[in-house]
Amino acid sequence: MKKEEYVYNVFENVAEGYDAANDRISLGLHRHWKRRAMERTLAAVPPEGRLLDLCCGTGDMTALALEMKPGLRVTGLDFSPAMLAQAEKRLGRNPRVELIRGDAIALPFPDGSFDGAIISFALRNTADYQSVLEEMVRVVKPGGSVCCIDSFRPRSPIIRPFYDIYFSVLMPLLGGGKEKFSEYRWLCRSTREFVSPSALRCLMERSGLEKPVQDSFLFGSCVSLCAQKEHSCNS
Image (tube, rainbow, N blue to C red; front, side):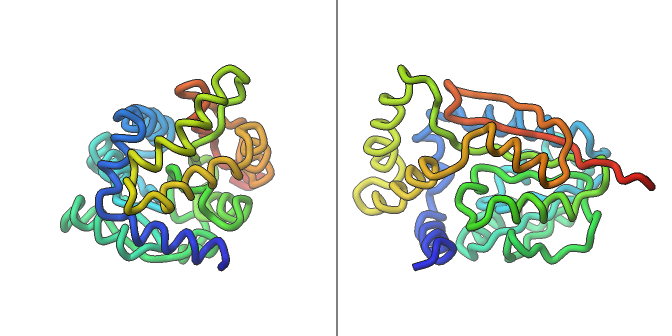
């Protein structure tokens, strides 16, 4: 089974209860990490600008963006109908929100459609990190912000063994219990197989982003990298 198909099935199965599971897994800390990443993202976005919430999941980042800047227009895109259904429950019929089912590697938007874009705990679950980043850069205006926040294995040789035990055994139990243990084991595996923060920085710079700013949380188990799209010579 291809990675895309496997990940699709994982998120279709965990959509209901996903937010509560994230609270249990991170002891609620993910909310602080996401807020910091969103602050970085929105710093370069006008009060009534357009934001892309890529792989929007249950819509928590979209809701956070609107809390910070109520005048924003936010487009949330995800490939999972079950996740989008949860986002619709959260966001209701907000005229400033558009939820779309789509592919992160082939975004259905013209060049320069958004003032900023963010992908939260999802890049590692895609089939081609570079292509996703290039698409994000393509649909953002020159000078606009692009941010990625995700899970990583800590580099510290002291912390890493404890992290590995937690993420391989305890995290799946806390997240999905026995019923959905295998789905949450995938989230552990996807973190293990993900690139390092320094490698992600290189991917972002190769995609046309300037000087990513890094924030690291909980010994490096969560890292956000936020940057701006390069200005063209004619802009």
